[in-house]
Image (cartoon, rainbow, N blue to C red; front, top):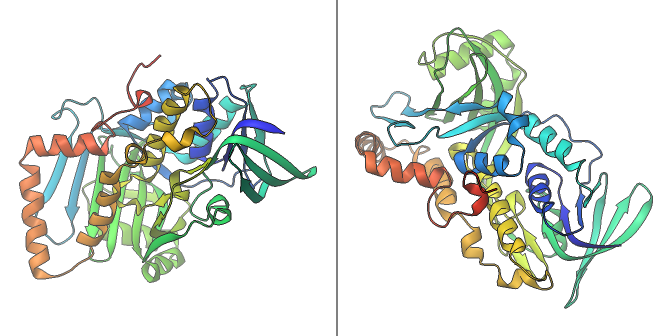
Length: 392
């Protein structure tokens, strides 16, 4: 069977791409190895560009009831002087972004895709072989009806850090294992969070508190694997006590936490993002530490860029060869994620002094904060149309 575009990976990235491309004239297949998505406990900080993308592809009405705006970002280091605050209003923005639980994004995407006649969703469908010639890519896929062959002009690998597409193409990766994990939960507060997102660095990791609906916050505690293992073994009362003690009382008293989940943390970069008719995006191409909350935002930026590029093509035959990978890659966000991880993991006196001075100086410099925020919000450099409000 022939498709114009085959997307491997039915998560938020692959699903968003399928939905964005479904407005075009192409026949699209979206394949995922799992029959149903497991409950996704992640709590996603969407920058303004990503929010615009979801608005422009018609998803925002389904997400708005669960989306909480970030009006201020507050960064501190436990036991050290120096605070950095970024206010949306001060910099001329309505909001710095929104926080949305991942499960609502997944549900909204697939509910929308079910109404697209030109998108065929195939789950479970396991890719077992991939070959290419000068004209097309051929995929061997195990489905519920047996092994099938599919061809496509363009194949997009959006199948995560352990990408089958990348492996079948023989693309190696460069990987940094931080020997850390992230613990994710939801914390109920005694008072309102005032739409402030907190990042509080520790001697061993960081605690992020992101505003959610109903006086709740998304809690992401990143630390060494050993510490996260210890925290997961605590009962709810003791874990809440440890969280309150380590984070402090900037959010007031914490009442309770929900179910906890963990995710391993590393940085991984594919040595090649494009190979003939195949392109890797999202975690299949690059996996980041969540310290700067940029991983999904970079992937959605790629969705916006790729959609704009493909819509401009008169033919999909060999069209990926002309795609600028420099435009596709948001190197600022990658450097930011790795740089913050390195900077706040070093407990050396000279580094501490420079770090504290830098945070104080940054807090006093509005132009620098606005430039930084523009990059982090996906509003710097060349901006794809889907990252701009009201593109319809």
